[in-house]
Image: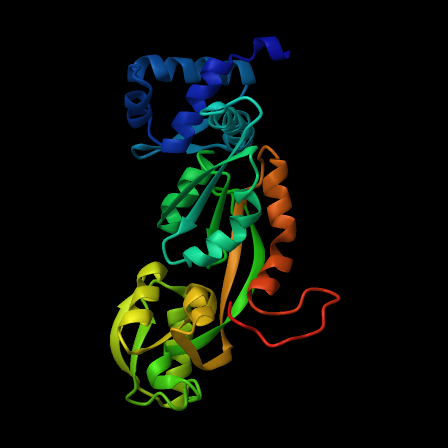
Length: 316
């Protein structure tokens, strides 16, 4: 069989049926009758000379040949979706970079990461935040180019993703300067009964902090738990409570002297990742951001760049 004998319209229908695992649901999505869809799948199987599905109850399960065909369909139609996404909203000489960020990630960190693009007149940025699973779905549908997250995501057959480590930052205990300037506390040993605002349970940092307190036999007094880092920043600034968070979240307040660092722990760290699809169009500006991320992470964490003398950190 030569390439001209492969009906890509039928192949597209196979892809949608394989993704839903259900003939009726795929027919509704494609706005065709179930019988017409079934007929076109059979024609494709005849062309390929092998069955693509076997029925298990009410569901269609891919055969070995079906699994192989799906892997190629993912590349073919995934890249087609990416092409449409790249063309959408494109203007002459411009590159559109679509960045998703999990809601629990510091907006200051995100801004630091994209800062090299803010003065680039050839780049149009699209920034959105949300839940990790929703963002990954949009990434796999090629509606985003990269997702920034504070949790690593493993790749598997159903989610062909690449997770790149961008850097990490130690966690600090910060408080209002009027009450805490010049004072220090050990984290977590000195936090028994201390009023704290903490990242919410969905944040990767929270589990680390709770485990550290439990191991030390310490029970702080929880006054607020906040998923959104922008809101946690406001709570840290205005509540009068101590707050446990990455310094990058309150970098401006630390530099202005509104907040001060009261303590810290290298046993608590937030890690940052950039997630992309394995098969994607290479966007030069995105590749430059990914390549420069570890250096920028050190710089914004107050750590020296290669070749620099070590100096005290001013903030995150």
